Image (tube, rainbow, N blue to C red):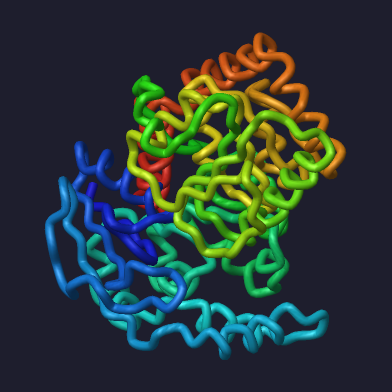
Length: 393
């Protein structure tokens, strides 16, 4: 088949869950299909600045077409659009204005879909909340497959989505919770779907010596991902500092990932910023636990990566996806309050053998559900079913 993958940003230099998910899937689909990626020239998701060259390029096994962003995001106007759209009383026009303000504004990409969409057998769209998907998908709805990466947040309450979620011919979901969420918002009925999560290769063992230049010693717990208030990192640090003030434990909290928020400081809190893959592997190999405080997730890849290293987890129970993943895997504990956070962290530190069993159960879950051959078999089966249904209708 000839397949297009539409995503807001793309490339090895781009950090982001849905963007990485698209790239990994596109590269593997290219082993059996002709795959084009249609995306913007932006690398950052805050302003959508044009930093990558416009036009066609070949990146690995796929052809990539980048389109210029016509209008960078204006943060003040976006805040105003958000205030109107998330108000209790708002209009459909307010919702549309929010999506337009969220961006990226890529009129060339939308025009390309209108002119050339019929040349593709199927077109996959990532992340419904961005313009290339929310505006682009209806242009080619008859051959569309949506990977919504939906989280349980205010945007999903928009009335405009009830009709939008009826349009894709098929769906690829990251978790069972996400499928339930989208199906409910669509009125209880959607096209054919599959739940794939993401694929993982077996994790390399990383020697603790990799961490020596950082001055990190056992014991420590780790958060991996974007260091951002939207990810709950400020609440995590506050909880941890309160825990240290009450317990004075010999344990350090390490946060590894691009930093987008100023956090409270403490001698037992280390914010590393962006780290290399070998440091990331060493952190996940030698930490006592992964701590994941995010209130909103469609799939937590960092959690799967931790289990891929046999690492137990302590996650935010207020995020249905995180709680559901932990319950299905038997891979750790979850907390809803500070007291539960403190009790869970102490239990994982004080019961190393039982903690390791959590980690082993998480690894077994990854082996069962998230190895690439298993994931791609599910993807190929869904795409074949949608293509057959299209051809016969």
